[in-house]
Amino acid sequence: MANETKATRPPVVTILGHVDHGKTSLLDRIRHANVAAGEIGGITQAIGAYQIEHNGKPITFIDTPGHAAFSAMRARGGKAADVAILIVAADDSVMPQTRESIEHIKNAKIPFVVAVNKVDLPGANTEKIKADLANCGVYVEGYGGNVPIVHISAKSGQGVDDLLEVILLLAELEELKDTSNVDPASALVVESSLHPQKGPLATLLVKLGTFKKNDDLYLGNQNIGKIRSMIDYSGKTVVTASPSTPVQIIGFSKVPDVGEIIAASPSERLESAIIATQSDQSIDLPNIILKADVQGSLEAIVSAIKDQVNIISSQVGLVTDTDIANAAASGAEIIGFNTKMSSPVAKLAEVEKVKFSNFRIIYQLFDYISEIKEKKQSEMAPKLVENGQAKVLKVFNFGAVIVFGCLCVSGKIKIGDLVQGSKIISLKANKKDVDEVKKDEEFGMVIEPQIELKPGDIISYQSIEE
Picture (cartoon, rainbow, N blue to C red):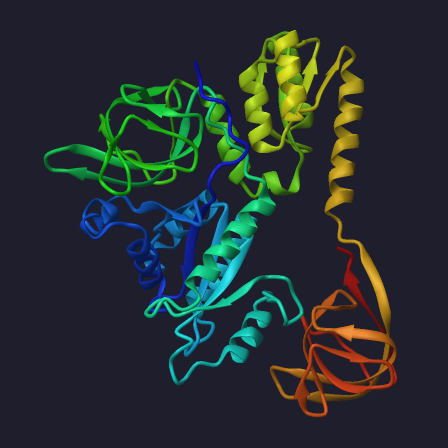
């Protein structure tokens, strides 16, 4: 009998940032604090992932490479994770790979925390880092935004506990569902190699279900081995691996590629479900699982709606408990055409809060798809609130940067507010950097991207409603 499903699963975390900013040092600091001395190194380094406990709560870390040559793998690492740490050296600030890492995090659409490392060095300048991050569209707490920022020293351990607390808080807000009872189990390949004695090896990060010793291993519908042995981050042999757990698997018949989805049984359905939750398209379009009575109807519907929604899977037949599990894991709605679900499956759908809509007339299905697409677009559109107005007094052109000297006519103006769609990234009053200015105060502002304003213009400034 399957174990009772827990409410949540451990968060999966990746650390991204510029080379030499301290990612490896931070990983080592966290690992040394949580793993016995005899277990450090060896298998811990080899599997590219490990799990720790902080205040009794497990956290999984993926050790994605930090060098620019491995940017593709780093992008996969970001998508495999629930939370990211953007590490920036306090004596070096934002660098090219920092900007690249920011793009990976934004594309993955996951929450993140900025870890300012090396704050104990003489050249540390955290205010410059905040300004440089703002220029990259990252606005930290206390600097016009809500991205958490923690000051740390990976060398001494200063602030590392605070960083772990923030990670757990972000994970709690994400409400990560435990999917250990989903069948079949599936996982993401985070590292792979060919061992001269052991043969093909791969580190899997379990995404859905629970892997067990002797389970078959499938890439899509292709059998590529059987689990002969599973080894955890500390080198111990385990017989099961649940969601968010990294394990090194022995038993592959060939070396799988990093980023591939491995399942415990043939399942194109699960592969497409996980990939869909990681794709950029799934962010912009509503996710659906499509079921129909016959193949001809299914193909006709897919052809008509494929550009309007993100179809995670499309199959003929009744709605199954696996469909419910996939929908719950990917935030999808199940759309049926001349199909239905059994009473036990309907109860599972109610528990998992998965919506099921069935249609017998095809144009009604098409109308419904249009409605949910419009609703999704409406939900995604930012709602703007007007905060007040300012008058442009002077324009200072410094080449790459244009500063507008203004007078606040009404309300308050803050860093991060919008002017004609451009974001305010810097405010100065009385020659000092400030976070906001009030009515009747004169100030200088820099906005990005630049727009054309002239003295005498009255501008409105807005903020995005939270």
